[in-house]
Image 1: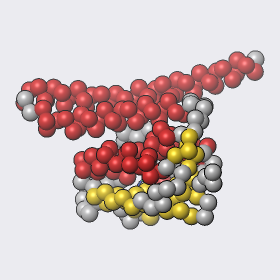
Image 2 (image 1 turned 90 degrees about the horizontal axis):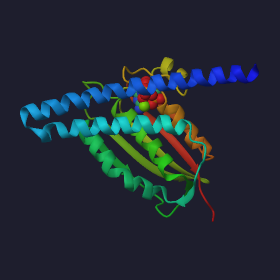
Image 3 (image 1 turned 180 degrees about the horizontal axis):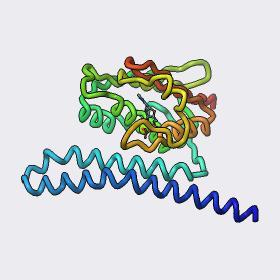
Length: 226
Ligand code: ADP
Ligand code: MG
């Protein structure tokens, strides 16, 4: 009986997640379809390329997020966080360009290493990037995204800072709860997943946000002394 109950709960979780994935993917899919049709009608392929690419990246991100919720193994290597960041700058620049955001990068202590799963750390940074570019309203001028790194005691610290709309107390209170979202097209798994990934690495994940001023996410990962 107990097993049956567990199974029932598991199936409920599975169907909840399946419905979530299907729902989230339908949206970018229809955008892509629409833009492909437009591209063919107008013969102006380049114009629609950026949007199609960005929607495909969105779908990929959503799938990655849902997949990693169920990923158990943490395959880690000693790695330079600066190198990981470097491999992402092209994507970050493109995404910022698309959203009219000025991107600033200030990397320090380039010789330091952390013990991480590279693709998971990338996923965290891409989730934060996505949240930041989605945090700007129509009227938001001087959009800025700044990624800054520093060493603090025995940690490598990465700060992701935006001057988007920030979060009111009511949102901050709920932040980190799975499926909590204020967006029409949100999944609400970005922040909880980021927090889980960083904590699974023995690190710390913190969000500092002021309503209508901006948001800073602070990640710290233990440094190696090897
Ligand atoms: P999603 O992005 O799918 O909504 P997340 O877990 O990534 O889910 O984020 C949860 C909520 O936290 C968002 O819906 C938004 O309200 C808020 N949020 C996260 N990051 C930011 C940010 N940089 N600026 C403002 N609000 C944010
Ligand atoms: Mg998000």
